Structure formats: C-alpha cells, structure tokens
Amino acid sequence: MPNFTKEAIKTSFLKLLNERPLNKITVKDIVEDCGINRNSFYYHFQNIPSLIEEIIADEVDKIVKEYPYIQSLGEAFHVASQFILKNKRAILHIYNSVNRDIFEHYLMNMCEYVVTTYADTLIGETKISEQDRKILIRYIKCSLFGICIDWMDNRLNDDIVEDLHRFLKVSQGIPQIILKQILSS
Image (cartoon, rainbow, N blue to C red):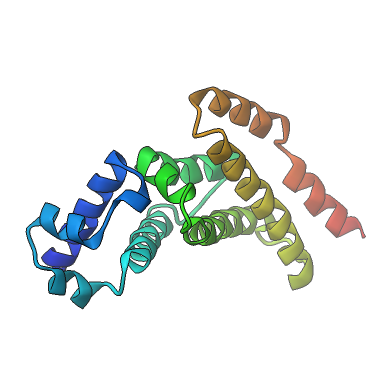
C-alpha cells in the first residue's frame, strides 16, 4: 500500500526539479508545494539526497519489472534512454549538481541490469566461464553507460539521439563477436 505523504513529497520534488536547479530547492519549498509540515518530510527522508536516491532507485526498480528480457543493444539503450527522458530537466539538474554521483551510481546499476539481461539472452545455453560472462557484461555495460554519460554531457540534445542509434546499428554484432572470441580461446 503506497504511502500518500511520501508519494506527495516525491511528486512535489520532481515538479520543482523540473522547474529549477537542485541547489535552488529546499525542504521548505518541497513541504510548501505538497502542503505538509517539515516534520513529515523528515519522517520519510533524511535529507534531499536521500529523497533523490529513493526516486532514482524506484525508477530502476520499475525498469527491472517492466523489462524482464532484453534482446538487443538497441533495446538496452532504449530502456536506459526512457529512464533519462522521463524527467529530462530534473535529470539534468541532478546531473549538473553536487549529487551527480547518486545519479551515476543508479545509472550504472540500471545499465548493469539491462546488459546482464541482454547478455543472458545472448549467451543462452552456451557454456562460458563466470569470469568470461562478467567480462562480456562489463564491456557492454561500460559502453552503454558511456553512451548515456556522453548524451548527458550534450545536455540530452535530441540531435545526438540519431548519432547514438547509428552507433548502435554500426556496433550491432560486437557482443556476438566477443562471445565468439571467448568461445574460441
């Protein structure tokens, strides 16, 4: 059963974060926006960074439930980009704040999930060592994370999306080549 006060805090925070930079939002702003008292905020969250962390963790959990199977790198990027585009301005405000590490941590976790799901589909019944499986996942995960960070550094510019899709098309088959190399070594 959802906690309505907690959800109201998250909703107000995201609304404010889509309007202004993170360093311009206070607990007072959040509680005034959602019509609760300060103590209610602190009952649910230690501070604003803990609120950010829970919101991002919730989004990652939603992705995990929504995508139990991932068939391609393109689909993996699509999943990652939906996470970012859902609240574009809010994400940029977090990304350009002192709390960027929270965002990057969860983005890396999300990339690891989608890549592990994709790699498990790619590997299927093929017998490879756990070490080689981890190497394959790390390579793809870091590539996907790097693409997302590059996109963030370009302020989520829509022009780069076409380049990213082209990159994914050009790089299609690279994980299969790596898997083939693993199997032949």
